[in-house]
Image (tube, rainbow, N blue to C red):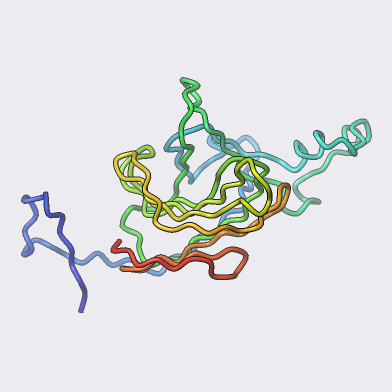
Length: 212
């Protein structure tokens, strides 16, 4: 048995024409390792909005005040000798126009459901997190679970579960969490047919009923 939902504004689909699409259980993980000379370093990720690129531990090391830059240029960090050498870095400007936008990058298919999604995030300011149940193109329709470092004290920083519908944001839940700059965090969402559960570093922080 299964529940079937039809869009109320789509009169072209008839129930007798529905078919079941077999979808195997899928697991996907990315450490952003890239082949030398790869024409598309972001594959299989799709840039919806914003400016995204592969970032390396070497680039981070060169900007740290305690780093011996001359020594590192002689003996640079390499991917085979450095854990988590590559990471994905995004910004809030459109690459071709410079317009300030919500940066969104996606992977997978819009018919995926009932899944867990997690990522390790390093954030010093602003807001970043997980986008899921993304529909269409761009940054119009999706759900998000984000860390907001804000501009206040550590105790005033928060995490939000929200939905963007037609480009308009609606906050579904919010929780204040003591977050620290220059730290790695692991946000995670578990989505079901009628519920979203949010975690931070393995601990449940939000549980919201929502028909997906």
